[in-house]
Image 1: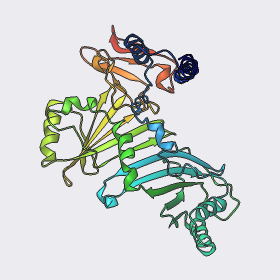
Image 2: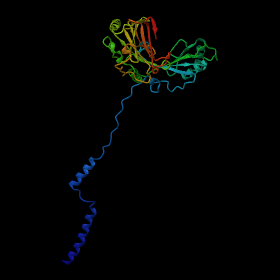
Image 3: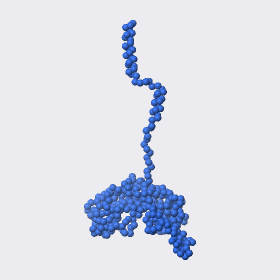
Image 4: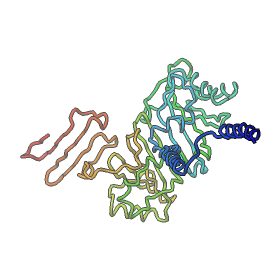
Length: 368
């Protein structure tokens, strides 16, 4: 019996030590499990990706940036000065194609100007020589590049106000003046929409509210365009409306909204002012189209959402000149009177006053 007990104690000791070695920690109770679950749920969740910001509207100057300027990577010689860029979409004369055009002047050596453009277009040496001679003899040449670009070079015209007139240096036999260059490229179908957005962001429907009852001013921008001129400091965005009876619409607008119409090249035109935006309507009864071109000088502002202030000079009866630098209010009865206002921030002005009052019938004297 004693021998049996002496054998039992070592066996129990081994079993007990084995059990202790297999136990890694205290047994979890329901309370501890609940605490752990609460701690886990209190952890900060992993944030998701930030929301995609709304794209900013295009401003007119964006047409010169790399996203829209198809010739942005073209290194320009010092003799070239870019003054204008334009996009046109859907015109019948372009067979529905969309064009981007960059315009610049060339001064100095006309031989070098034409040669550079021919090289950029990938012309052979013989073709380049022919185009140089063509321009130097007649003041005009046109050619198509290997990449599809169309280059038009013509002698500068001192009467063309789109650019600052330039002169050649007389180093070669030529016709006398510097040149005006237009480089045209057809826009790929995949990129047309962003150019259309440029027009849409700078075409203001609020400015057309006075004629909305006579013409559906909403547009799908199927035929539209924009021109931005740095020399004139103006942007011109347009859209074309095709309607069944142009003459009837023109007459309704003339009778009820705008009575200041004139004829130009067989078409009727008028202008409406809305804040800094001038809308020019051109009614062409032959093609059944009304083109509305909106002109403004805010090249770094998207004008599509502009809303005119409730109180403005135009609402008080002031009319502005074409440059938008001077507003004039006139009252001819019972006296001839006008009040003119100019603000320096509106642009250059050839007078030295900000406000002028003029009346010709004050006790027989002229008052200014």
